[in-house]
Length: 374
Image (cartoon, rainbow, N blue to C red; front, side):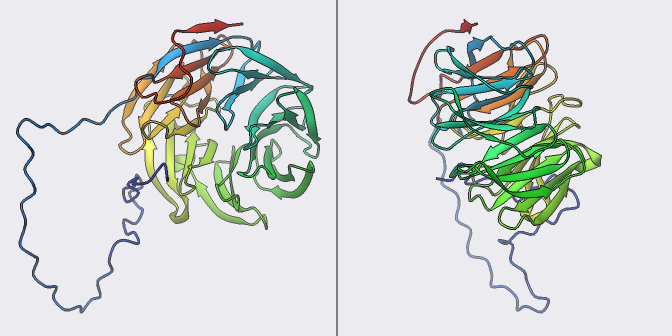
């Protein structure tokens, strides 16, 4: 089932964008007069006393506080099977947690510099990490051992992403290069001289035939995975610097964050900005945002005011603000099957917080209370 089915993509935040869609009939100049409209049929009357149901909002509450990082957190990622949470930061360690108990399961050690990003293989067996030591490591999570070490970047590796079948890995570095790797062989199969500045995000679409990237040069680019050709280039409004980008779960849209305190949803095929989500603060840090489709259809994003914001994807309304962090929230992740959010902070906070919407929880592990783990 398409998690974004029914999303209204006929509206746009771009005043100059065309309002015509494939569903709009094109009427020729000398067309014959249309037939008279049919007789209007009055709509059915609601039953006495019935009131239209209000749009239900999320009710996320704190569940666990995970302490253990000693330097700023850069990424938190749930495993695809939902059983584990991985985190990394400016220290050279990857941490694996249970999101249900808050327990630290193991540390993955081997990098010699800080880490910026993580990506899980689709079977939740392997985890890839991007490091300032210019390497990528693929970890066998159950054993905590390095499965492969990918070398080829000459500058800090800032971002990476597995494709849906985990056969390919794409990574971006601070010299503007993007590399596509054969994940099973650990071999680079293509290098794209993609941007003129730090590549801050890369992401495969669901079919793995496209890659979206963004960089501090202000551009969002769509690439053909097989040929390495740049198919489209999008630019944020008013020279805003884009720092995070990803395809929607159905691969029809792109979500981007930028340093003008705005998150945008793009119809990239038609170069249209469909929705803009505002209200948070983002002018300095590389802050992530993501889709949440397990309960309602939300956009979840961090903020420099130490809060986490949840927007209604369709209406752009802020439907909940999560408070509890004591510094900038840069890392955000949503659970693949349950109404759970993980968030990570920097500098004076250094905690990961797990939030859960108990009112919407329909299955899975249930544990009440808030726990702190060291």
